[in-house]
Image (cartoon, rainbow, N blue to C red; front, side, top):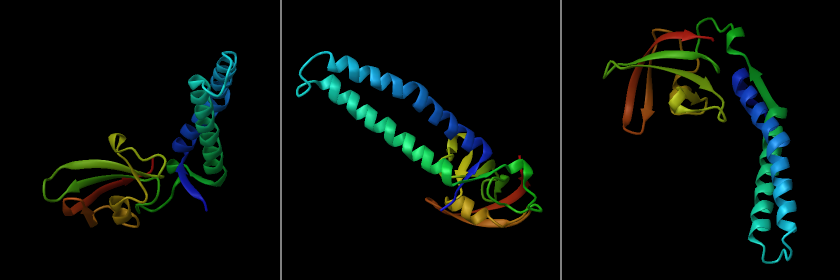
Length: 157
């Protein structure tokens, strides 16, 4: 199964993978060696903690390698979607009830960060927006109930 990622999101995952392989792995190996030097491993909390950390680091490396190997990397700036909302698009919206304006970029699950206005392609708002155009009105099922938004602009940046 292809995992959609923006070009930026793929770069973040590659940076994390590099950090884990080049720095974290070395730190864990050193911590295990240090803990081993303290003698009896059966009652060595430092050794147990270092081995747990090693399992986490190796698991995360495998997870990132898997995601990147199956990723469908999309560069939003190269999209030609004729003004339609698609994965990677940045969308300016206006809440029709409150008049509040908000901007979201539709990204992959691993990239989603509401603080950065990046919403997962699987989120209710993204699902409501996909395939729509500027000036369309969409209804989103929010936790507080249905909300209506007008799409003000769709950009591919």
